[in-house]
Image 1 (cartoon, helix red, strand yellow):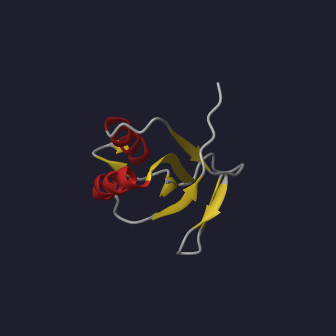
Image 2 (tube, helix red, strand yellow):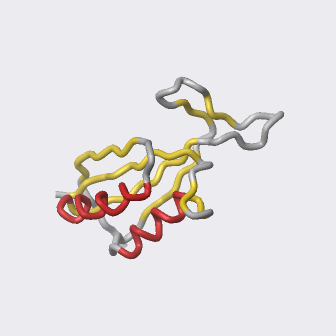
Image 3 (cartoon, one colour):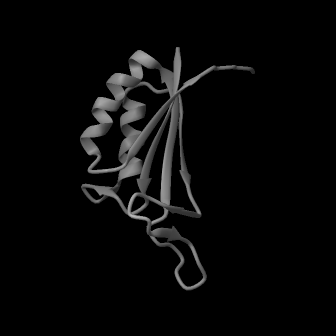
Amino acid sequence: MHVLVRVFLKESEEFESEPLYSRILKVLQDKGVGGATVLKGILGYGTTGHYHYEGIEVMSYDLPVVIEFVDEEEKVEGILEEVSKYLKSGLISLEKAQIWVWQ
């Protein structure tokens, strides 16, 4: 079975002066994940209820970022153990996924 993983972060989060989403992508690549995507939100809010937005007066204010990838469930478990070492807070969601590949 395959799993779709979404890691929810804030754009401003860093690890050793590097954007956290960039560090996590490197971990995914090192662990052999075939592909991953970083999506930047234009508006969102988290558990604090504070909006994160991009507006005229502010070009960027801690916008939401989501990293998505799909892999086999057993492999994902090990990957998430590694990824969690870099997270101070946030949310990770998992859902079953059917994979269709065409070329």
